[in-house]
Image (cartoon, rainbow, N blue to C red; front, top):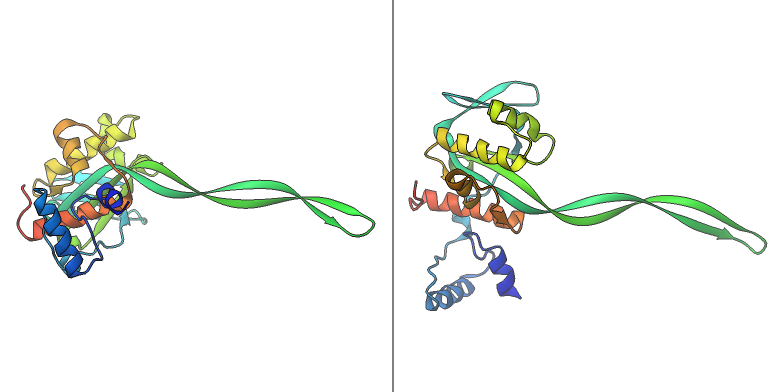
Length: 227
């Protein structure tokens, strides 16, 4: 069961939270199967900062113009973008439904019925299209959910190429980003969008999506990421 869980979320970072003996034992076992891994202290991995919401942006020669809630445009220089991450991600969401039921109140002589409506919280899982942009050293992190209404403003930057399919819009947007910021590292989802125009690469959880970003930042910091 542990192996299934680890394998499902194994995007770059295979295991976190273990001690040195556990990590070394796993490394040896994987090496025997021909799988190369490296053991590192968690302290050397970059902490992902709280993401800022991407709404309206514009592409300019000097950088990506990002609008804040007050409508001010702040340029993000192209050479400061370190990671472009995108893909279809399974997210856990909570929905609230209104449920009505009859409540009985009674005494020795009478019974009273009253209709009561309550909010019931339910957990659900659904696939969503995520986009994240991280600057050098994970100093800043920008985030958007491409299949939600707020992404309508984000894709205005595509001009006449913007369509009705959020997945294709995201793919075009990532292609433009990668073209303007060629030094940026791409995750698997963004890579397939750029190389094959395919937005279908899926991550089983937000944890898997974020762990791959953490791994890419570490690979880049140690000079191992191909560009």
